Structure formats: C-alpha cells, structure tokens
Image (cartoon, rainbow, N blue to C red; front, side):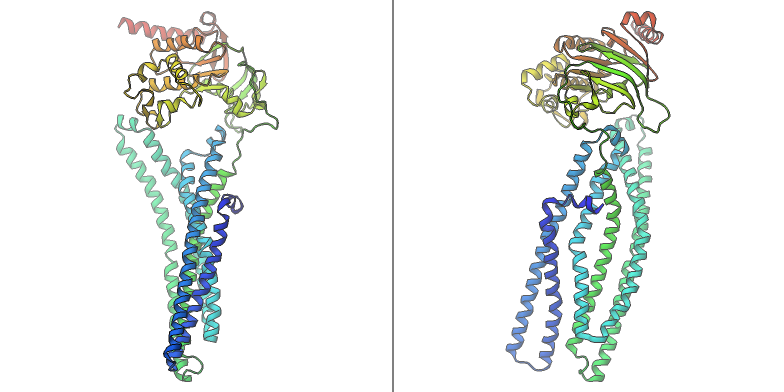
Length: 582
C-alpha cells in the first residue's frame, strides 16, 4: 500500500525530503534553548556582569529566530508536499477510473468512488503531512530532550523511562480498539453518499410521490449510523488525553518535589536552580512529543483504512485491455456474432445471452425488438467491447473485437444509449464530443437529421445555449435528439440507437429514420426499439426473447411467421386504433 501511494508523490519528492531536514534543524535549536536558559539563570545567580548576560540573551534570541525560520520553512514545504500528494492521488484515481471497463465500474459503487476521491484522500493527505513533519519532529524531540535531560538532571531523568511503557501500552490499546471502528465507518460513509446521490438523481420522482419524509428518514438513519460509529471512535481516542495528563503530572510532581529536595539538601551542589528549570522544560518537551506521536498514530490509524481503499482503486486493472499488436483500422461496418454467450458475472448461473449466431452486412439497417429483459442492450454492448463475450467471438469488419485497439474500435462504433447523457456546457460543446473538428455546417446538418435544429433555433442563444448537468433543463425528447446528432457527427462505421427515440413522437421518429438513410448510407445502423413502427422499415429485424434469437426476417415475414413479433405488432396497433376511435 505504501509503495503504491508513494508513486503519487512524484514531483513533490524534493519538498517531501526537505521537510524532515528543516524539522530536524528546528528541533536542534529548540532543544539547545533550555540549555542556554539554564546557563543564563546560573549566571544571574552567580552575579555575572551585564555584558555577559546581554551576550547570552542575544544568543537565545538568535537561536529562537533560527528555530522559527526552520519551523516556517518546514510548514511551507510540508503543506506543498501533502497537498501535492492529494492532487496527484485524485488525478491518478480519476485516470484509473477512466480506463475501467463496465465490469470494473460494476465492482465499485459510484458513491464509494466519490468517498475514496474525497474523504479517503483527505485522510491520507493529513497523515502524510503528519508523517513528514510531526512524526519526524516528535521522536527527534523526544531523543534530544531525553539526552539533554540526562546531561542536566542525571539520575532524575530515569523517571521518563518509567512513564514511557505506561503511555505506550495505553496508546497501543487505544489504536487496537479504534481501528475496527474506523474500518466500519468508511463503509457506512459509502452508504450515506449513495443515499444522497440516489435522492438527488431521483428528486423529481421523490416530489411526484411526496416521499420527502421517507427520504429524510432514510438519510437520517444513515447519518445517525455514521455518527454513532464516529462517536464511538472519538470516545476511544478520548482516552489519549487523560492518559497523557496523568503521565505529565506524574513526571512534574516527581521533578518538582525531588528536585526541590535535592537543591535544598545539597545546597545546589548536586542540582542547581538552572538545571531544574531546564529539566522541567525538557520534561514538557518529551511529554508533548509523546502527545504529538499519539495524534500521529490516531491519524495513521484512520489513514491506513483510507489508503487501502485508494490502492484498491489504483490497482484495479481494467478487465479489457489492448492486445500486444492491436489492429488500428476498421475495414467496414460488418458485424458477426459466432456462437456468442454472455453473462455479467462469471459466477452467475444464468446466461444473459445464449448461443447468438448473427451476421450483419456492412451498410445494412437492422432492427432489434423484444420484451423487457430480453437482453437487447446487452447484445449491442459487445459490439463496441464495453464487455467481452463469455463464449464465442464478436467480429467487426471481419476482425475479432478483442484484437482491435479499443480507441480505434469505439471511434468507429457510435452508440446512443437508452439513458442519454448530456454534460454541463453549451449545446455546441456537447456536440463536439462527436467530432472535435466539426464545422458549423456539419453541426447544423447533423442536428437537422436528428430533428434537433427545430428546438435549438428557438432558444435565444441557439447552439450556445447552456445545458445544465445531466441535461436537466431540456426535455427527454430534446435530450435524445441532441445525443443522436452527437453520434452522427462521428460518422462511424456502425451506428447503434438503443431505444433512443422512445421519448419522441412517431412522426419525428419516422423523420429521423428517413434522414439516417440518406445521411449515412454506408454506415451499418442497428436500431433497438420497443415500437414495431421504429424498426419495420429495416432490412432485417431480429426478435430477441430471454437472451436468444427467436426470429430474423423482414417486417412482413416476421408478421406472418413469428408469434412474438406478431403479438407485439397486433397489441401496439390495436392500442393505436382504440386511441384513434376514442
């Protein structure tokens, strides 16, 4: 885990290494200051001249300034290094997620990925900041102060070794109890974020069904669960403070009582006032160092779990990868399924697609129809290699899709998904996803074919109209038509419309299909639809039923020979006839 996280330090290695150096110099200066103060006290007691006192005071001031200077430098380099690590981790995680296949994304919930890129990285950032500064400063301070305490106080310094095992045992016990709680709480964070995300995405449904109270109760339950675990963790960690106070007061009581006794009984020969003041200062330094170490341990305890969650994302290799020598050119838009079977999870008992044999010629228009759950969308996801077939082969342009360069293949397969997605930005910027080098004329032509120009031109700002996140300020039909226009601008070898005209009226649907015939005559077009009217003009229609091909043919032949297609056509036309009569 540490090795993987350390790779993200990169350009911040220099400041990461400089921080411990500056901290070490700061500690040396701080530990010399009590020694100089002890000398100054003894000089005053001995009746030293004003010149000597002034010289010692100047040295003290200089050492304090040098300590402050190195401490400030350590703070600057530490902040730069920790923030840089967090920046690189977010970048590395985001890039890793971009390379994920759908199978990888299915493994991690969206809410969990968000938590890992925010809360978990912040925990690692804070831990790294403490490691390169506090975790260096505290042990050095402890060692230097202990050595100086022995120099100044002799046998009295052994009291520090007595309290160290007590303090260490207490810290180990606290960390051992807190670690499992933190492990639980991060998983509950994921569920809390999932609840928020689900509520925001489905806000219209929540309001339509007046379920605000239910959603609030669900959120409160998740938030309360997180609160309870965090409270439990904080209660455990709260033992740090009283344990530390006990050790501090024990040491101070011993030093003050035994030190005073030694000074009085030996008349300052075994221990003088200056030495005792230095010893008290060093005792505070050591105990504060132990307190800082306890804080470091607490932060590291939290960060270990966060680090493991981050590394799980970084080390998750994509299940889809380019072959050693990928094919970088798609010859044509032909598609062949040869005894293809597929399931999303290799451990699943049931196949989503079973023994699919299908051969589509380049430039052909294919309709796919079937009931809900018949695996229509699963079929077309194998063409652009969003998933790999479990058995058999899928070929495009006569080449197995697994032999293509992924970018090359997907650039030649344009998919308008059933759930259309628009990104925040202008209409023009969204259309550029299809073709970065598009001209205004190409953009307008694609929008005319998709019947999107008619509503775009009604907007005051036309193609520069701003689209809100997720396309929330346009209707479902408008969103679909913009997504179709975006796909057309790719001018792909294969165009797949996955029920992408379900939100438009039948007249507009017919106009779009007619436009596709003339706009991209050489492109293979695969149209998935629920309405027979959307596919009846296709060269061939495929009827899917429970992941199997039930029939292939023209509209007329299927109407006469295929029971499922005939039933769908009859029920839809009867409903339309009843609607017209009504």
